[in-house]
Image 1 (spheres, rainbow, N blue to C red):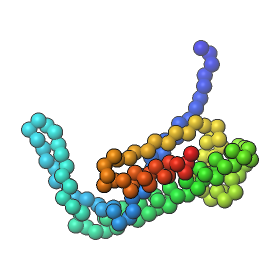
Image 2: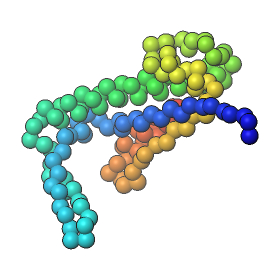
Image 3: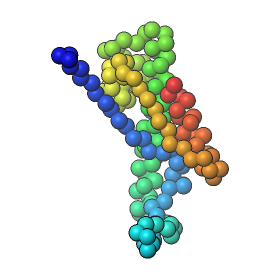
Image 4: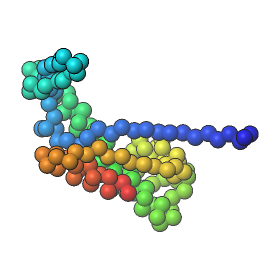
Length: 139
């Protein structure tokens, strides 16, 4: 075939939305078994608490970004459904978001997929519901 097509793929890995109080910089003990497998056993929080504080601060920034992204998707979807959004136009209230500035035109012409990593165990139910809630906002 003499026809060539070009495209772009953007992949964005979003961290979880765990509350800052649940985040710790952990210490692990490495255990090697005779069959060659290796296991890392959780020992508890690392003795250097500044490492945990740093992770918690990163988590707060990530959560803010996720909130902004959810708002962006909701406003963009509303504008598209009302047929008021075209490539090059702005979304009121979204002009400061990174996605709106740099990816809006691409997203208007793209297929967008959202994959959510969730855990089935009951002890992770709060995180699972939070993740699925975010996904629902993006629809």
